[in-house]
Amino acid sequence: MRIPVSILFALVLTACSSPESTETGSPPAEAGPPHVVATSSIEAGRYLVTVGGCNDCHTDGYLATGGDVPEEAWLLGSALGWRGPWGTTYPKNLRLTAASITEDAWVGLLHSGGGLPPMPWMNVARISDADARAIYQYVRSLGSAGEVMPAPVPPDQEPATPYILLAPVEPR
View 1 (tube, rainbow, N blue to C red):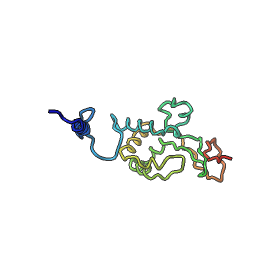
View 2 (view 1 turned 90 degrees about the horizontal axis):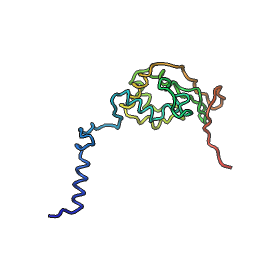
View 3 (view 1 turned 60 degrees about the vertical axis):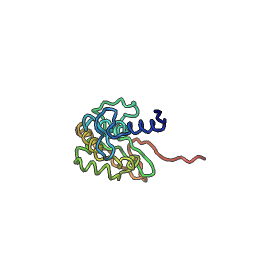
View 4 (view 1 turned 135 degrees about the vertical axis):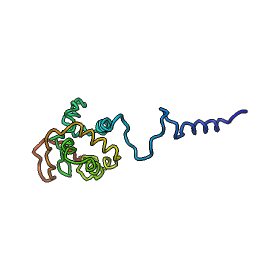
């Protein structure tokens, strides 16, 4: 008996997409919002901080050195401002922030999306609770260190620190 190719394809597709079928042979993950799975929540947080680009702004020298900054110096904030039509903002010292609030408050902060540019709040606000908690636990594991960064400067005032200008330029 010959089985049509379309039926064979459907059988293979069904077997491969079965919820019980995974690469590791382990049962499927529980349904819920997507989140990082790692050996620990701290490792998940480290991964999220790294691939999420948190260090790009919140760690002095990270971009300029291609990420060659010791982990002990991560997330201490930066006095290098970001200036645009909203004024000038500074990447906060996340280690001091995490040390000063509860995990639930951290999750609420990330979900509120109420900060100034260039922080991509519209994206950060979509983070799962599990991932927000993992980042909090990772940042807390680094310990409280560093100083408070400068407060935002309104657009009509010149900042006293170096800054990166983020302003559109219209072609002539």
